[in-house]
Structure formats: structure tokens, C-alpha cells
Image (cartoon, rainbow, N blue to C red):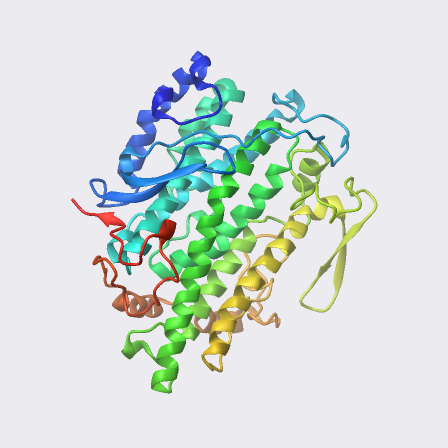
Length: 464
């Protein structure tokens, strides 16, 4: 079994874990065949495969049929450190699950693990409308790596949580994104990803939330979780790159068509209008903000106090007080008032603020492309209160600029700000697959460079 699974967790010498994974593996392959990428099982894809946790040479590139991908289990190297935050910052990290935190750690790992197969399910049909072989290959790279992240969480469940962990590992393969009776745990991972604009926005915003959740878990006092998520971050960076660069390429092509034609309505020219792209940004950014949970959270406070989950890069010098007992967070409300929240209870909001700053840097890069092409319009992030379903702003009616509205006015104007069925139909008209090496659909610009220094006309996917 371990020969099929690249690993650095000494799997050959853990007979119980090998048996558990051997039982789980066929179920995983059944799940992949049922809801993984549709229609490309026999295609050979130029994929990156993790082979070690070394900072140099940790992966190789080769043609692989996706069902034969070698999903591995890797932990980043162990660090000499203390827990460093919460109520007992001076303690050494735990190598086994502390009994008093067993339930909380299992919940954290299951929630993270549930997002990984969900995104594969959401993206199942996108290969049929890929704008280029480069993009098709990148979609499949994300898919196999999200599945590897599922393996990472299942390893923790199987290795450290006994029968409960084995049952949770089975449930991760039973839930389905968007299923009426057995959906995924978080709303954003039940939302349909119907087209490539959805995909790029999801990878930009939802996967970026994943980065910040993984960063906070990499600070965990449970050392196997910390080391697992630190390695996952090496792959997560690529997923965000696909999203950010994908939207940037749409912006470039759109702005070029606007400049050439002298008009904003470029759908007839084969382009995606900026106003429509803004609607997708509004939708996925607000959906992703909900993933951080409530701004005032007793669970977040408990996780921090216990040393289970820190802030973004908690160990850095950015924070003067790693106990966070004597400070407060000021939550601004749309009506101009503010609420003081004890800092520990505001850990979700603190993490979300770091995320928003990161998203703003991406917006700045897209707007720089518009500025270079003399386009008058600019893209923006909607206000934190817009279209929220979780937390202090849940159900509040406000526009993308943060202006409070009546519920009736929001309902009447909703289609101005969020994608409609008509909008999606217009996008679908443009999404014709392009599978010829070096060619690309007319609604998106070519990438700046190929994968692993390959030329842009490289045959990234070889069809059967």
C-alpha cells in the first residue's frame, strides 16, 4: 500500500494505519470516478506530483492519467518551537491529540477536510469548456491537489482519532457538494461553479480563504496538524495563482477589446464585460467572507486559548501580545457605529482582515492592467456587509458600497450586483472549448508563460 502512496510518515512501519488506508483507498477511487473530472479519465495530463517535503525538488512533472495519480501524505519538517500563543504559550507542541481537545481538533480537521473534495465536485464539468490546454491542465492540477489535501486530512483522522476518525473519513466521501439531503458543511462549497469565470473567482477568493485557514492551522499546538497544513500551503499557492492570473487575463482581453472598439459592450466581439465580471467578484468575495465565520465567536476564542488555531502568522513579530487577553477589536458597522469585541472572540475578524488586504492587492494588479490600457472603469471589492449570510452582517440589506437599504430595495436591485441567469447564459455563449496546442479562446488573453518553463504551445493534455 505505501508503495502506491508517496509519504514521509513511515507508513511501512504502521500496520494499523496501512490497513485503514487500504480500506479507504478503493472508496476514494470510487468517489473520484463518480464526481471527479468528467470525461478525461483516459487522457494523459502534464501534472505536478509531490514526491517529498524538501524545499528543493519537492515535486516532479510528468504525463499522468488522473485516476493513476499518486496521492501522497507529506508533513513539513518538524520545527523547534513552543506553542507560542493562548493560555499556555510556553508548552511544547503536542505530538498526540490532547484528550481535552479531541472533539475540537476533530471538528477543525473534518471541516477543513470537507472543503477539499467539495471543490473537485464543484468543478466536475468545467473541462468541457476549457479556453486552452494550458487552462485545462491547470484545472486538473487543482483537482488532483485538492484530492491530495483530502488525503492529508484523512491521514490525520485515521492516524490520531481511532474509530471516530475512520467514520469521519468515510463521511468525507459520502457528502456531496450541493446535495439536498447530504451537502458539504460550508455554504460556499455547495455553490455551483458553472463556468470558468466562476472558477477563477472561486480560486481567487475561496482558495485564498483556504490559504488563511491553513496559515492559522499551521500555528497549531497540535504538531501533526501544523506540519500537514504547512506542506499544503506549498500547493495552495498555485490554486490562488490560477484564480488571480485567470481574472487578470480576462481583464487584459476585455480592456483590449474595449480600446479597439471604443465601447464597453463587447459581448458581440467575444469578450466578457467588466460590469459582468464585477458581479462575479461581488458574489464570490461575499461568499468567501462567510467562510471566516462570525466576527464575535466563542469557538474562535476557545481555539486560540487552547493553542489549537492562531492568527495569520502568529509566530511573527507582527503581534506584540500572543495571549491576546487585554486588547479589543473594533468592528465597524454600516450605520457608522462601532462595537468593541474582546480580541480573542474576534479572531475570525482578525483573520478576515488579513485576507481582505491580500485580496485588495489582487484588485490593484487587475486595475493596473485597466490603467495601462486606458480603460475608464475599475474593479473593486464590495463592502463587508454586502450579500452576507454569516456573522454580524448576515441578512443585512446594503449595496456593494456599503449603503444601507430596505429589504425591498435590495431585492429590487439585486440583479444589478449579482449574476443573473441571463448573465450566465451570455457567458456560456462564449465558452467554446479550445483543445489545440497554442490556441486560446477569444474571451481571455494568453498566459504570460507556460507551466514548468514549457512553451505556450506545449501539449499539456494528450487525449485518448
